[in-house]
Image (spheres, rainbow, N blue to C red):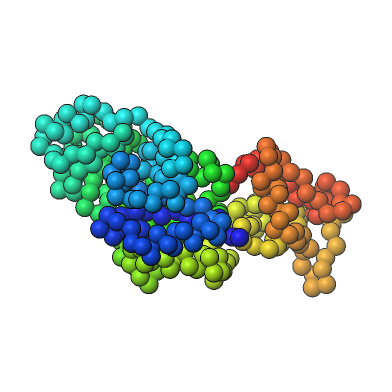
Length: 322
């Protein structure tokens, strides 16, 4: 199985008019039966979401308040990833006539016409906060908190890599989490900026578009996109000419250029066409290198090749997970 999880936005993507249609719920059930995980990422406050989403149990984790809250439907455990909003910020916004004003555990939100006032207040108070747009809404969050950071926490909790995830969204605040997904998909009603970063756009809008993606995940694991998503290739090193030598997670083999021999060492044998020899290894062996626990250095050589030979490759400071 190539993609182990689906990450989806709620409003405008999974839902229409707050609610999930029966076909969408059935599609999520099929996704879970296939053995895949499901993560919901939303700008809504958690209580608000649970009041309109009756199938929260279909998700392994829910990231709410635009990345600030992570909720486990099975255990009902909530994790807050940032501090509550500034009381002074809330008081000043109310005093300036900003209404309606939604106050969550971390997030403060209002309507788009108040954007300039919100930005002015943050500037005047000297707060380290960010203003994020979401269609007709304006959200205020601590710096560094967004759907992408919330998703990152959720993936670590589930033991998943972003290279194993497909995501789908529609609005401006979906940028951060879609950019963390190996495959980003936009529904047909998505904002133009979201369509530009997507690997493809579904034919249908909202929930029907999500159903399209789920059906393709189950039927062929998005096989048509295999090897065509270079933005998440893993950099292994650089060639002698300075070009990048990368490995894509879906590749079956990887061909690496041989390192030039030292001047006082015997040069490696050339191939029949006179070009330098290359080392080819299976993708599984490279994945073992990349995911080796606590790997800070990995020596990888062909049988009998001395450390100084051109057949010898070295990978340094490889993180445990990518």
